[in-house]
Length: 342
Image (tube, rainbow, N blue to C red; front, side, top):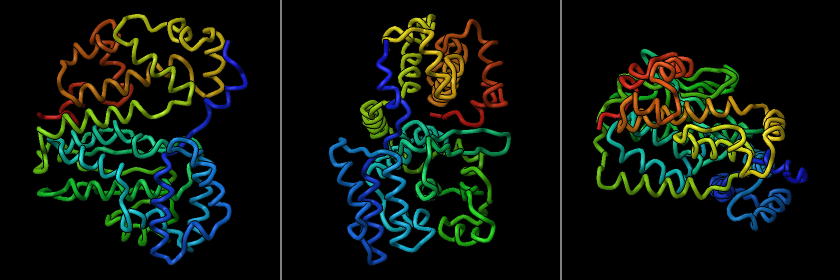
């Protein structure tokens, strides 16, 4: 049985520690430093031995100290104008080397954990536009969310070379009185106040070829990003279960027994622990299938029928029903909207 003393580790979220020097670099523009905060120095020292990662709570406290030291409530939004970290540059390079804007968007969402483990990106395709939603993982500091938003809008500006404006609106969790300042910092005319974080993109531009596309570099960049993604630590039971489901998808047998066995827990214990995490085995299977379906359709190398069987559906019609439930669109319509035209 699983040692219950380790259960808490499954709920931990650790962030890439490059965010600390990035914040420190930005603070230089304000004439201050994280060295001026004893709390920040303690948290940084504690993170030095964690192989490039720090606890989410520590990351949030560093953001709080940075905002206090700079006396700038818009520090996160301003960060992309002051300094761009290497991991984001690597992700941006992969996106720019992609053949189309839609391909860039798919690579962006797929490899974003290399940049931040606290934010998950999700593409939602509609008839006239596409929304990129930023889902916070755990208790994320709002400055971190806004920093990510700033870097994403910066990246999309680079993808607009030779085409019209790609981002039509940004949604932030800010009061209406601050939206003008947010619009100026993000370089976006339309900023909406709301509880969520998202960017609205022009759907008709997704199939637009990119002048920066590089078919020689792209596969090598993708291989590198895949290696980086695989090397990220997985401390969550949910992540471990989803990884097992991914491995077993094409086998035709993704039973709870086959998932629980390698984790050294019983199926009953697995169900109980997943329930404590606010999810279930069935929900995780559904999530893995949805994520894989969107990725495989985006890659464009398999027919929809092949994708259905690869994902373990009994027939293509079952896959179509599930895909409509996930996206409010058929796989064929989704391919027309978001698919890559290599």
